[in-house]
Structure formats: structure tokens, C-alpha cells
Length: 131
Image 1: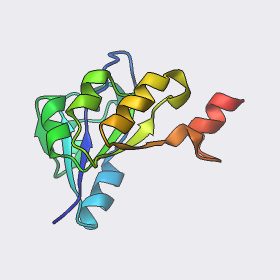
Image 2: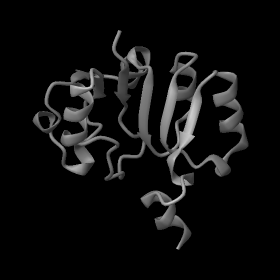
Image 3: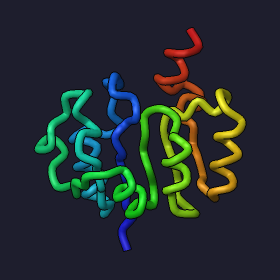
């Protein structure tokens, strides 16, 4: 059974980054992953539907979260997003873990494994924020 990677749209309409681009989607599919993307999730970064190739497009974040084993995101999840994730989901992205102990506790309570990529040594996100 392939791993399903989900990309929900960002709650911030001014966000211009995207957690996935076409080259990465192609490589993941070659490894056997399925990718589910909420419509509009890549629009701010000017990545079009055709740029991602063979992905499954859905209309809501709830559909992405229900289908996903792994969720990639830019920015911390909302309370609603955390509640919608299945127990055992792996969440990866720029999560701002120090900004809200309540959000970290909600992730624990929801049995979501979270990786705040901005905390990885040498990551572009980390170097950008610690200069």
C-alpha cells in the first residue's frame, strides 16, 4: 500500500510558498507515493495544476487530511486542521512550535507526529530566521 502525501492549501491567503513542486512530485511518484493536493494549494507560488503531473486534486482540506498518511504544510496548522488529521499522521512543515504550547499539546492529543522543519540544523528555513 503506497504512502499518501497530502498538501492542503494554506490558511493564509498571502502565503507565496508551497511545500511541493513538480520535480519533487515526480520523484515521489517514481518511489511509489500517491499525492493528494487541495485545489489552490500551489497557486500563490505560481505552480499550476499541470506542473505537478499525476496528482489527485481535491476541493477541501478535509479531503486531503482524510486521505493522507503524511501532510506537508507551510505554516502552523489550525486547530481545525489538527482535529481533522487521522491518528498516526506525520505532519511536516514550518510549524512554529515555540509559538503555541497549546498547538503542540493538540498535536500530541491527536496522536500526530510533527516535524518542524525550521528547527533542522542547516535548513534554509532555519538559517533565514536565525540571521
